[in-house]
Structures are given as structure tokens and as C-alpha cells.
Length: 360
Image (cartoon, rainbow, N blue to C red; front, side, top):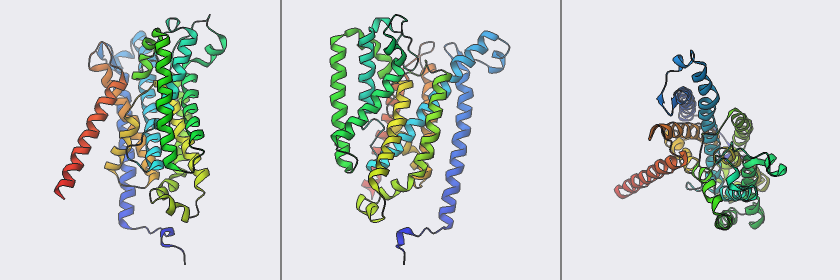
């Protein structure tokens, strides 16, 4: 007789839950489309009418070449971070896990700092994802660019954590290795900035998070990464469901945890690296998006990774629009807004849960 955990029973509750998930996903997509239209009409001069812009070639070029790719790029980066956050929290069985946990953020920041130091911070136009390099700069580094450096650095940080953890067999060791790598690479970045003070100023856009330099090429790249990773995460959702019951239980189900955990880490690293390479270090989106998705629909990890990606995309898109409006005509770094709003949400969530626990 097969074990009870292998039997899947369809009940009215599970059918209702599945309907709720897809309804929520459709609602998030509809809100994202509305947000895209809103973002295309928001600029340094306030809110413009898209219909009016159609009759002004200059205004329409601003909408098509700057505002639309920026808004869509913010959604794609947020979706990648939301997906990575859901995978990280399921993989480590920790609701406080975020996409930067394995040293990807520190690795990306160190790589960007090294490129700035090598090329000379004064010869670069600051901005993440679309930094212009002088033609006289080193051809090899110029081809790599800051975007490529950030992506390679993020993956390098994760690989270093894997080496220190001696593979993916022990989750706790991997978690500790990621924390150590983050501190060490962060210290190395600080040393680079101390050695060349100009690098510190040039790094501000990257470390605070910026979406203003995202173009159609960056959008295409992030979309090309998001689609297969989302499908792969959906296919690996049963592994996350099994890990949520404990590693011993997951092993008892006959799952090859080593290779499957390595695939999940690859999803986490690639999603985080692609987002960081285009928009810099934007915190709290990957941490908060899975919490919001779980709060609206209790589900297994399959629907959860989809909802987390949709919530993350909508969150970062709205934060990007707010960054343009709060102190217009100037802009706030979007990473500052996500940190403030995400921190306030987590504080409220902790207070709410403490209140419920106290009343129990």
C-alpha cells in the first residue's frame, strides 16, 4: 500500500484554493498592466496624458524610449527578486531568507567596484544597468561593462558560498557560508572604496538601487531569464514542498536532494544576478513579496513562486513610480523606498503576530 503522503486527494477546499490562486494571479496581472500605463505617464514634470503624448513626437519618444522600458524593467526586476525570494525561503525553510542570502549582493557590488576602480570612476557615467564606458577604456572591461560585472560577481558570490559549504548537502552549513561570504566580500568592497574615494560616489547609484537607466535591451534580457526560471521553479516546487516537512522526510520520499537543491540554488542565483545586474541592490522586495503572496493565498510552492513573482513585480513597479513622484522633479533611489516600506511592513507583521500570540 502506498504511503499516505503520496496520495493526493482533491477536495472542495483545494479546488476553491486553486481558484483563488488563479483569480489572484489574474488580478495581479491586471494591476500590473494598469501600473505600466501609469508609469508610462509619470515623469519629472508630473503626470502626462498618454493620448496627448501621441500627438507630440518628442513626448511620445520620451514615453516609448524612457518611461515604458523603465517601468517594465522595474516590474521584471521585481518579479525576478520575488521569485528568488520564494525559492530562498522554501529552500532554507526560513521566512526571513532573502535573495541576497548567499553572497550574491556582496559579490555583485565588489565586482562593480573593481570595474570602477580599474576604469577610473571619473570616466564613468553613474547608473546601474546602462553605464556608459569611455571609448578609451580597456576594451576587455568595456565589453564586459558594469552589467556583466554585476551578474558575474553575483554568481561568483554564490559559487564561493557553495565551495565553503562543501556542496549543497547541508542547508545550515550553506546558510552560514553565505553569511560569511557576504561579510568578507562586503569588506573587500569597502577596501576598494577606501583606496579610491571616487569609487564610493560612483557606487551610490548601484548600492541604492536605480531603475532610470533600464532600456529595452535590459527588459528583453530579464524577460529571457525570468520565463525559463519561473518554469523551472514551478517544476521543482514539489521539492520545496517536501523540504518544508524536513530534510529527513524529504529523503524518505526518495528525492535526490543534492542535485535538486543545486538546481534550486541555480534558480536563486540566476534570478538574483539578472535583477541586480540591471537595477543594482534593491532590498526587501524579495523578502516581502513571498510574505504578501502567502497572506493572500495559502498554497503549495508551485502557485507560491508564481504569485511571489507577480507581487514582486507589482511592488517594485509601484515603488519606481513613487520614487518619481515623492520629491518631483527630483527622484528618490527606488531602493530607499523599498527598504523603508518593506521594513515598516515587516515591523507591522511582527507586531500583529505578537499580538495574536499574546491573545492566544
